[in-house]
Length: 240
Image (tube, rainbow, N blue to C red):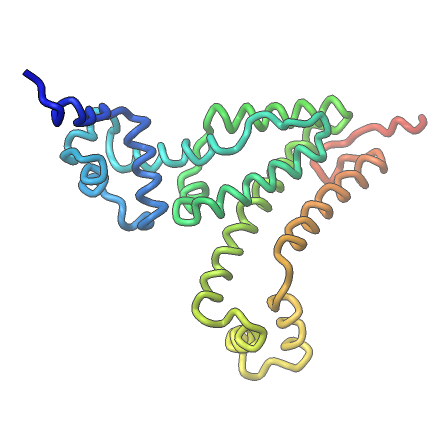
């Protein structure tokens, strides 16, 4: 005989690798990488830590699985036929990914893995660039730079944001912070340069400026009919 209480009691969702990894990512998002352990992950899922080993090999496997989840958030289809706009979209997506998962994002560089989705996205973008006449070596060089710019810029932003949370977010505070990093005998010119480079700026604008510089730089190589800077020689089609 069943009671209303028994009927209303929700059934336990069975464990799976996907569920374990999703819980691990949420745990890192909330508490940081240092706080992740198999015991705590088991507690979060309402099971003994040993039960997790039916679905993951060990903690390293969990960390690699988190990286897979992070890369899965980057679309593998550009959503546009314009490779330049696709490059911008990719860079913005990478920056947004780091900001969504600031505590897990360092895994993207400390535990590099090549997921199928990541490679599909790279392959699609390279195909688009080759179809538009971009030499493959130049396309690859741009793609590498875009990944570095998107993730590296965002990680630097997070570092600066932590400093601002420490109470140095206003103009005076930033000036004091930059000055504290300089040698005591730094010349006035170097102090001014440090304030210009490390002082306040609109990070959104700065990010887009970086993208513009990369794309315009590649365009200049293509217009000149040479790919030497990318490691290849291309023949100009403007004449013999």
